[in-house]
Length: 132
Image (cartoon, rainbow, N blue to C red; front, side):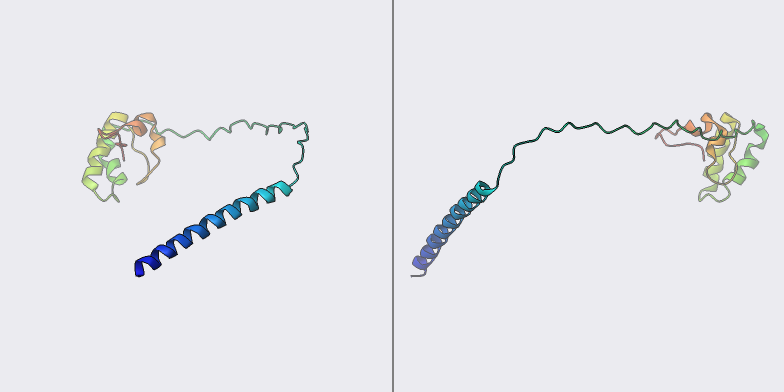
């Protein structure tokens, strides 16, 4: 008995669903039939005027530090690495960079551009910046 009721309900649902979807299709067809279609009007379109190109502003020249005496590298690197979490590692790497590039940037962080390309472009085997 329950099986017959389930089959009846399923058949009723399918009948109503197909009926509603076909009514919906006719509704939209009727709706679009009432919408007037305007013929396209050809209006000349002007291209937007390009924005004026600004000349690139030159950044102020970076002051490059004079070469450092190699005997001063440990002292300068000690000041550069004093706040580093791995002071001995930082100092060892900094001394290597100082010996190769003959420069140590001022401060404890940044300012690498003041030592030029040698200092900024030196990389580790993992292609990370070498000099602190």
